[in-house]
Length: 155
Ligand code: IDP
Ligand code: MG
Image (cartoon, rainbow, N blue to C red; front, side, top):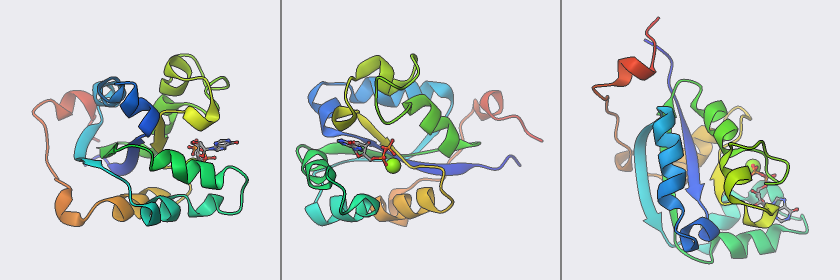
């Protein structure tokens, strides 16, 4: 069996306000990643603070917490081979004008503070920690798709 990873995606308030949730989810879905969890959530401040705890003390931290709480967001978990790396690649660099063309941030954004999407980073443990922070186990669905063998090569 091919090894599958799970990773957290947040469609941030700017993307929600701009009506880009479908476009963003669609790019990840079309790549072949499987959606195993998704919900609309008005983010409690404590959750935003815990999610971005690594940035506490930085100049942009309070603005970042305000931003993420400023409208409901879509939280999702995507699953697939190398899912963490694949999603980060499709998302692009933090600053949209340094991200590669073809990535979500480069194609749809201009500024670091309005970069549309969060994705778990490749630090070991980040993705499982974030998935557990945003989703209860029963909110996630393990399932397979009829077309999985056309996305996931069996070894
Ligand atoms: P990432 O989202 O690409 O993982 P991080 O460095 O983990 O980037 O930063 C988390 C988020 O904090 C960014 O996506 C962005 O929304 C925000 N952020 C980071 N640096 C700045 C900054 O210099 N100004 C404003 N917001 C920032
Ligand atoms: Mg990060």
